[in-house]
Length: 143
Image (cartoon, rainbow, N blue to C red; front, side, top):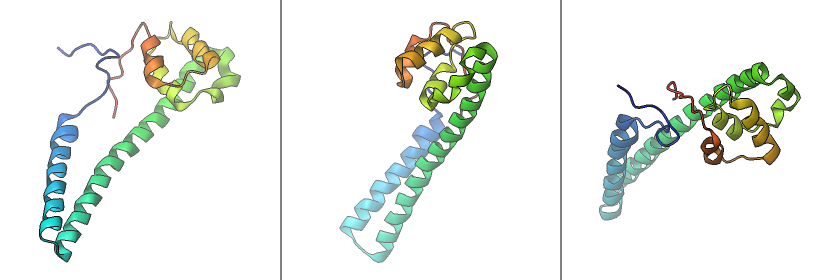
């Protein structure tokens, strides 16, 4: 049985991606760096540049996926807020992406008051907002 999601364990880690794949790339980077320093040649430099490009692809691929996820969450939360708190409709553009991404974990019963508080206090720290949530709603479909 899967563990219930909470603030403490909600960050998604894919071991094969975050540890194994990154570990292999990191080991290869340090090996290529060592070779480029100890036995410099054009081939060694090109191999080092290739592994740097591979590291950049690794990080950018993750960042791009998270950015798309944030955009989808923004849309989902705007629709949810319109349904639950129609009075907030004129202020939907005042929410930042950090606020909306954090509020998505709040239950429908807790969201209206929490959304008002986040806007009124101009809170923008994702962790601080998530810590305010009392009735945590799991998001198991994260990228």
